[in-house]
Image (cartoon, rainbow, N blue to C red; front, top):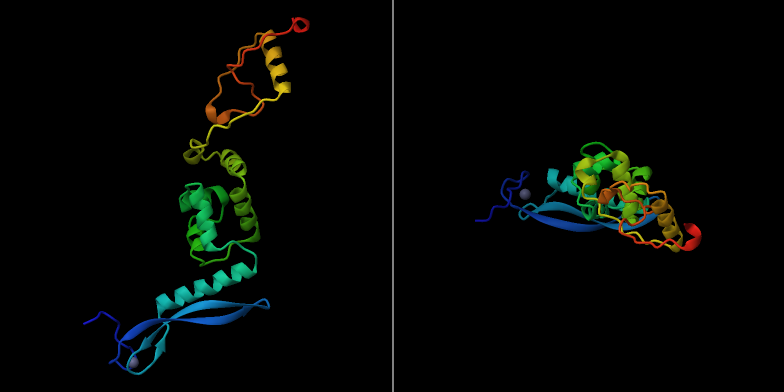
Length: 196
Ligand SMILES: [Zn+2]
């Protein structure tokens, strides 16, 4: 036989999972939400159990987030995975408490406007993400920061010439601390007459 749950009302029939698209309204906006329930094949009772109830609550909250202009749980998960963060690391970096991201991503809880703005910022800018990691000194993530590729304009090369002239030793730079303003160490420069 199959392993379907026995109907708790008639005790004879078995429950079959069903979904129904329901139109719901939030803040004057209508949207279709897929709701789950189980139907008895004997007495026809429709029952919403714990699991279905939880799923329905998430579906409704997901719709409300969209109307409120907030990122969906799926979008938040994608941002976290883009930066290869665990949910705990994401909370350490962005806030919200230790289990916040599990709740956000499962649409159990709506995140704040401030969290939404922060998430959108780091989604848009990897630089912003890494600056935040550095600001929070999250060593477990910081060591992954990619070395930045710097492009030097002619103006920066003049700076190299002046550095060489004063014979100041250049401090060794760790790859993840390279600043855009730091001249490339291997740059060779012939100082022109007027500089000597
Ligand atoms: Zn029944």
